[in-house]
Image (cartoon, rainbow, N blue to C red; front, side):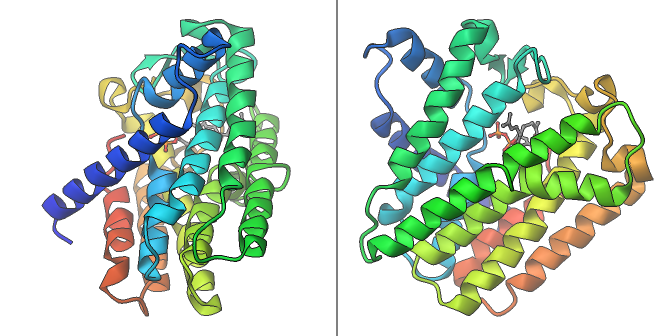
Length: 298
Ligand code: GRG
């Protein structure tokens, strides 16, 4: 896939996801207006790469599935991701003022509203995920809802966030840091690929390989996120870099230096590509996305 083709692809997928989020979420003028306005502010007000829904759709495409039936589940992933950002930005956690280039939810509204907007997005995600998927038995959709709950919850993202908080202001080993990354960021990214593969109709081998792709991609994504936190530009990123240092958090660059962290990211990108080796050109968007990680600016 050429860089121009990838740019067109990503723009089209982003628009598709945003159109569907707009359709599925209650309008800002609907009661309770303040809650709906806060949700829309964080979900649609500042953009975002829409990486998780795009991965889900691309994994579905890789196994020959259609886009339309996967859209509600793809939107569910973006709702969960956005809730995690809203809560992560709260004063009790990272205490950030800027997210996706706009004021964080608690700054634009207030803390209590931001907590509720996050809660509402988390629960709404499961309502969306429970939409029947054409061509798939309800049992398969049910299994994917359980998968999402696991990867977003105690044994996934939320558990990873807890480990991350407990690792602040103290020495952390590389194994510990990797475990935090695998759970905090990796689990939802891996789940996006696995769920797309399953709901897209992939066979067991394909599902396993796309799960492996998601695992390596998720780790590479978090390592490049750590790198951007040191080298990134606030205007391009739409949030303030330097967070890891501010909270004395362990990160790949802090533990091994920037050059080695870059090498580690490259290694993970290569692993993700290896997992795709038996796929046809239908996995080209996933391949191109993995390649893009090493040039991330936001
Ligand atoms: C508060 C329950 C709870 C969980 C928070 C994922 C997470 C756990 C917090 C986000 C904090 C953070 C900056 C993590 C680093 C990696 C990451 C998830 C970055 C943001 O995701 P992107 O780059 O954001 O996909 P956009 O805005 O493009 O959607």
